[in-house]
Image 1 (tube, helix red, strand yellow):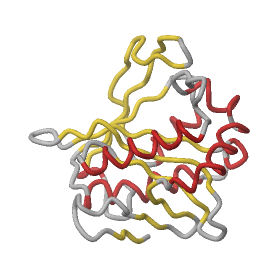
Image 2 (tube, rainbow, N blue to C red):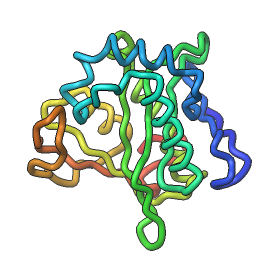
Image 3 (cartoon, rainbow, N blue to C red):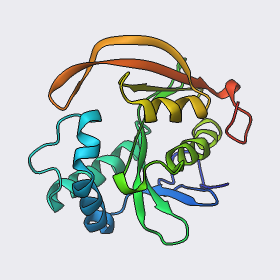
Image 4 (cartoon, one colour):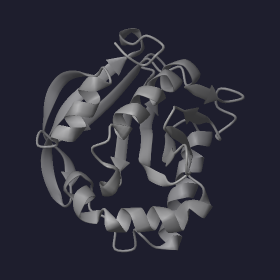
Length: 199
């Protein structure tokens, strides 16, 4: 895998590459393929995500989303990446960290999604495994947290395969698809991983 970044925070066009995938910041030109993949995967995604705004798949809403991602990266508050097929450049899903906290904490929260037709092939495990060394080495984070609903077995498997440890249970923690839901809490520390992204 390769990490391409010219500086710690100045270059928000960082990429992470693996044999099958590459991760890069979202572009405005991704709109049509992003909207199509999200639309066809709606039933697959909505049980696990906050309620989608009515205009979520519109071009204007996507433009606001990308500008938000760019501002977050410039301010070192979060980093969002499109996950693409390395052979075809087809969009497969997305991965982000948000709520970056510096100072004595040096932590952030991981989130991810994958289009329904790409699920079950180990792609998200590969993407997260590749992303973690980037988060720890390039972004200099110490701790990455993640939460998932107890019923989301595929997401739990991704986190466990990527070296996350279950740390707790959050009651009615996040409003998902309009309902306050319980979540399992996981974390991985920089010290937990070798630089290949594994325990």
